[in-house]
Length: 326
Image (cartoon, rainbow, N blue to C red; front, side, top):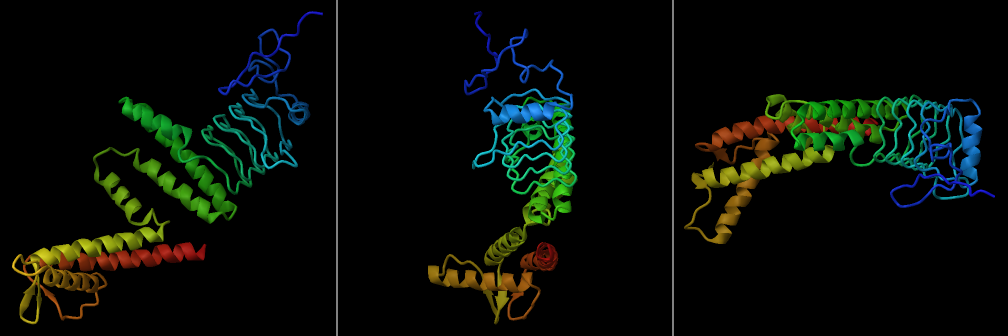
């Protein structure tokens, strides 16, 4: 009997597909030129998966896979479809719980109403993905999208036009994920996506412009309104910096100037620093007890700190209430 030729496909780990090869040298599932748009393709793929077929690197462009069940029942690990191309595939209502689809493509795929809980989509192209009413709690898209990595690489090579395009794509993907998460009531996840969305928008601005600087300050100061802890850290930082300014510029107390003095002992300077820190807290919170008063340039610092403090405290209330009401 003539020897049966096996599929030539193999992934980066060296694993090979054992399916019979067609004239192209690839099997039906790994050959991108094979038509997989028929209505019976769903049942064939389910059977292929249940029989232990190699699911990595499948070519499933425009495949009709509505309501397909690719859940590996009785196993803690889902099916591994890494590298699979599902461009414009119809996956509405699909059961993809715990599926692994790293470094593949879901570009413009229809996943409306699908179950993507615990899916691993790191490095996968998610541009134009339709996710209305999809369940995707604990979804893993990685720290950076594929487009983000390409944008950074393009920036390093000086190709700013391509980098701008990739950042725009990243913003669109994060916006889509955020809206879906909000619709599903996953507000913690949607908050993370919002931060990434606004970060991608900031990176589209000219590197040296006031709007980009202000956007960065908002991110550092409050995580675009999603991280109350950053407001607390920012407040403590402002208080500490102003306290140092008072320590070296001086403040007035009971007819004496409290400031750093080389003629004083270490303990005396530490007491002076503690008093400056106390005054900084009082000024930041706009309490204004009046026991300490600024002198010289300390007046300018005190005015700026009082203004900043009232703003930051109001910001903290807004961010905290926003998180609590969710």
